[in-house]
Length: 585
Image 1: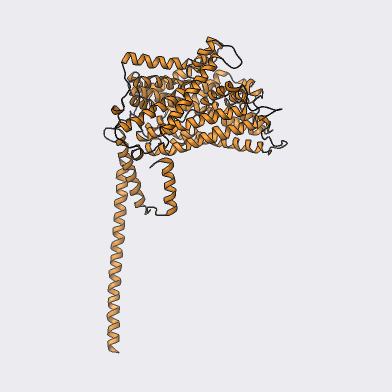
Image 2: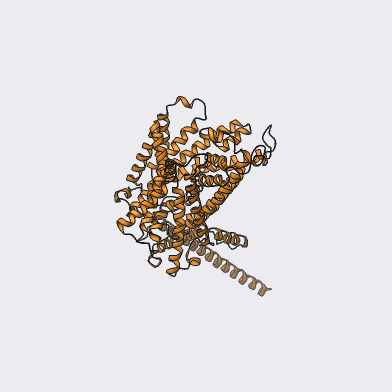
């Protein structure tokens, strides 16, 4: 009995000692965990205290990398959605008929998706300032880059007066707007478009983020309305179906091949803007990730807004509706016409307000893109150096001033009858700029891939984002754009419903000979040569690999400090695999 008591006492004493040891170890472990967490947080603060994008040897052109990934995605997703889509789509419908309009927009949308894949691959690999103008200089020829830079810069300078003019016509939708002097409207819209660009780039990013959100909201609202109207959901109206595709209320094609060619030209004016991603990448915080994440939404935008959306437009608006040709402003918009036909005028007022905000956004983007392109040309030595100077906040002062002054002057030219003629000629100078830009991107990408191959760089393993169908995508896109340029030349000589004239030809096609002139003049003056594949400079790509490693390190330490464990779930791994397939590694 005594032995049992002694044994129990010894066990109890041992248990107490063991408990004390465990408690002591737990306390030590807790202290160590706190110390590790404190060290991790200190390491995160240390990493965040220095800019991960500051890498020795990397030239950012004086810009500040302040655009976030979400801002880049929304800017590129909503870029180019302006009067080209809202209003000018009606001209394509009137000239080609519903089926011809669908064919034209679908063919060009596929080609433009290929262009986005091309620019995404090149920009994700080396997201430097200068965009596709710099890519053209480094992979094709400085002379081509010079002609492209001037062409693209003046295209976006013209966007400012074009959108101001459009805004004046849009506001006339409401009664009483005629009482406001036109000069007052011009000043008001100019201030609204210019102001945002006077602040650091983060202000532009925030503004365009919300503007793009409004654009998407308006487009989806109209698409849902047109779908409901087609099915007969509007009060007092039965199903529409395909009544405008056949007699007696319409027909599938109008003006045969010439109509489709005219619609292709019009579609090109509506689909621009996605190439902004290459320009904005030079001011992105996490450029490679931003580019990879933005490409897939842009491709989705092309399918939703320029294939599905145009299909719904052709179902709801007759190609022979006189308002498409004779009305002004948004009263000529096939979207507004469809809403008015449905008997919901209150909704037309709301959409008109959305369109007005869209136009202001496009004018804002025009100033940003034109000024950055001018800086790019300066940094590349294509235009005088003073145009590339930036202030402490990364704002290109001289480039902004020139773009704003030229664009504003063109706005006020519209106050006189002579000014309207002059503005028409200026507009014609850049009417084909988008096609030239896309053609240049395809050619540049073909050269880019040849350079990688010549220097032994494996595209499958080295490219952060990859076009799996290259180079077939680029060759098909090149053929499509060349066919469109030939078709436009044909229409410039033999216009629909008009006689051939030299005035009409030069007013609608002079951009092409001017581009060729700029290219030849630069080449003869500076004796530039085509860049050989083995001489292409890919060295700066390594700096962005360093930036990627730094950002991953910061994210890993931040997650560990918060107690977040790496995902080891089959579903999550599958989703990550799908994401990698879309955006690259």
